[in-house]
Image 1 (cartoon, rainbow, N blue to C red):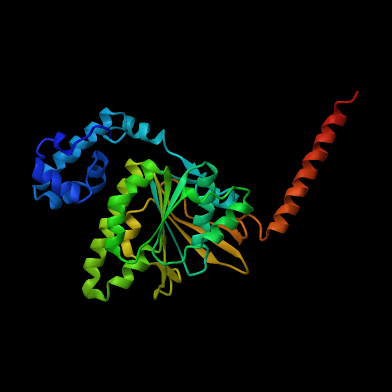
Image 2: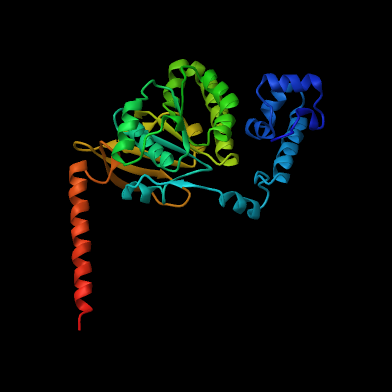
Length: 340
């Protein structure tokens, strides 16, 4: 917000201003994303006083026309008016996502290695790029391949533009928290980022925390990450996609595999999907959790264009040619019917 000073907020003097700035809290949106408890931890003031600061920051942004004071259905409706959806132009996936991956929401997509999680996120990226908007990849596994992303864009007839990609490789959960705190608002504001993909979040945390003795610390770190991402998605109109690994399920009556991360992860995302491998390159996209749709299975394929409706580009072109010929023949029939 232009002209904003931390000392404009009641209760913030030079000493607290320095502590906030050192922690990367410089704008009203920083207060909203971090929340009262973290502001309290940074400034050594009571949580109740920090909560007043957060509410004052929300009021300043709301007075400036930003729909962040969500205290009525009317204000929630104003926020929904600026929501955007990004379809991937694959009928089954677009049906599963009710028209596309939406901003103001957080997604979990889990599956075994090679299931196609990253390929799906690359396909979503091509849709974002088509709108001349940006995607931020936070790579927790070191598997990002720019050549593959460019191939997918080219096969989807979308001009690949590397300037519309923000990228960071992280190898530590604290490094990830630091990135979220210091870079997320900047890239969404100054680089027009609309989608954030965090590839392999739980895998990163699992490698750092070992055994049941460190489980509480692991889940606490995960909660800190998730609440910031959820706030970022809602208040800054972003779509956040988290890819996740799977583990074997010992229950003989349940699914063979489950997403890792436990209930902390599952309860804090709005939509959950799984991807399972089929024969050759076909995949099952299963809707696990949605506030508006029942659980269901949807079929897609992995090809040179990322996710696809057909098992190969060659077959897709044949289908398009047949559809075109059918449309032409129907047109001729209609014209003939007009002849006296």
